Every structure is written in C-alpha cells, then in structure tokens.
Length: 166
Image (cartoon, rainbow, N blue to C red; front, side, top):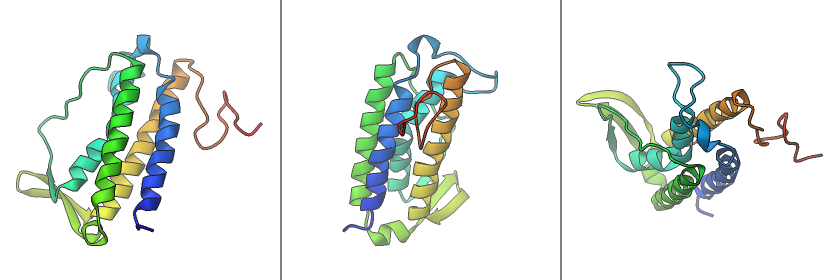
C-alpha cells in the first residue's frame, strides 16, 4: 500500500461529508454575514469547497509565495459549489498520488518576498493546511447554517437536525 493511500481515502470520505454540508447552503443567502468582519456565506462556502485543491496546488510547489490578495470568483449557486468541490478533490487526489516519501519529508516554505513565513515538512503541511484547515472552515460553515435556521447535517455523528444512528 502506498503510504499516502490513507490520506487519499480520508480526502474522499471527508469530501462526501463536505458535500452534505454544501448541499444545504441556501443560494438566496450567499451574501449573508453573521458579523461585518466575517466572510459572507458564499465566500465561506466557496472556500470550504476549494481548500483541498488550492492547498494542494500550493504544497506541490517547493516554496509558496503569498499573493498580495487572495481572490475568489463570486458564488452564484449551490451547484457551482458542488462542482468546485468535485474539481478540488480530483486535483488534490492527483497531487497526493504524485508524491513520494522523500518529497513528503522535504521542507516546504511559505514566503512573502524573500521573507520566510513558515517552513515545515510537506507531510505536516498537508495535514495542517489541506485537512485541518478544511475541517475548521467546514465547522464554521455549519454554524452559519445553524444561524440561518438551515438544518445541519450529520458530520461526525448526530446533529440537532439529523441522526444517522437512530
């Protein structure tokens, strides 16, 4: 078994869970924000839909230069979010499939110009940025749904609205 197969399996399993959350995003509420400093529902949902592929693209490089601005296209529909999720999971799966142990152990850097912002083994970056970052924002999105009175799907167990065990 390839040492990255468990991560690829996790990516696919978590993508199915993420799909259930994204399917609940109401298209008529995409501009809603819980607070003026917060991302809108559409911005957050798009971020959740695209984190694995975006981070995978960053991690595939030896060094990642922080852009002056992160820009994302406007979200028009729930279907667009699901399409973005499918594309990002495909992209991240392909990137993970190309890695070997030596490349995973190699140091990966985040740079701002010539300044090193972060340096860590690529495998640690995959776990921290591709996966944990994704789960963090998916949880945030579930809170947005709750605030909008949208039934929250089961994620790792029962939610107040859905119990897959009973």
